[in-house]
Length: 485
Image (cartoon, rainbow, N blue to C red; front, side, top):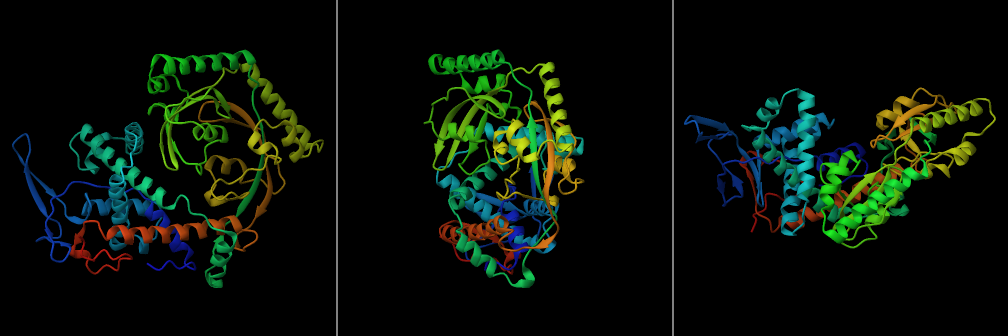
């Protein structure tokens, strides 16, 4: 596949497709080794088996491809196409041929992750599986519908199937990370990329905002902080000296709802958007070591490094936060209201107020300026803005200040925020100086895709790959038709 920088939409769509989750269901396979194709009498092959109740059941499915130890069935392909449609991928980018190649690449990544002995923590996969089932039941209203959709006969079978899917997806993502995570683009590479785009294909960026905020948090009494730190030190000592289970303590006591069910587990790289204090602890310890209690914007933590795998590290943490009194919450709200009034009466400049009063260290020194984590710029495209932030600022005019907003983060901590739209940028054609972070991100994506293509071509040479004769006419980017060893 020739990656043309001028086709920006195709570039973005391709990245989305490559990283979509893939499905893998069991199937009956007939392979003709002479021409590298899977053959059958029908497009959808019928397979009969005898159920425990003695009745004959008919399963209808066909095999689209085999990659290493993985199968891709026709039903896999259809489910992936539905996913791509829901992700907003254009019809031209989700044809059977396009989707099949993306799925084959995913299987190839997963296969070689196993060959390279990459490991995915079981607790993480189990937690993802449980979370998925809960979300799907909430969406469709019935577990039976989910079981039927996945062609399973019970909840246990569904969990097993989803576990396999999530394990494979995690393996593929880990292998892809090994291939692309260290790639960077220089300013000169970014400039060349932008210059190579024909004028008529230069991307159009939608309406954007630059936003600043002042964050006022309730004051926590020192005795409450001491109580939390002492408790974390006791847990740390119990694990190190008495062999107590860190996983058990995280499951029962951590106040991080997102990781509690998996025993406090996170996998991260230096590029991931974890808070600085958390990353500093994660990458300063050896395997098996446990940090002393440290503070972040979320509360107080202890962190244990479980596994170091090259650029990735598996850690577990326990999060506790000190008790905040209602009186402290009320005082914080009054303080925010007072600052808001002073801003309205021009007694304070917003930037100066943020530097003096804001309790958020990440934005305080820049006068409260928010940074878009997607590209590192100050600009937020309205169409892609976080929903919660969008509802708070989209109606504000340039220079206008919001009302005081009561906020509650995922740990339940309350704060009060005041927003200001510092700049509004209307829809515009990209230009190098103003849109450099976004252009750099596109250039990096293209470089990553080229590296992925090189990896796929190289690894497919010595991987067992077969596919259905129905797809013989597909114009694949890689030489999947080539006879495999």
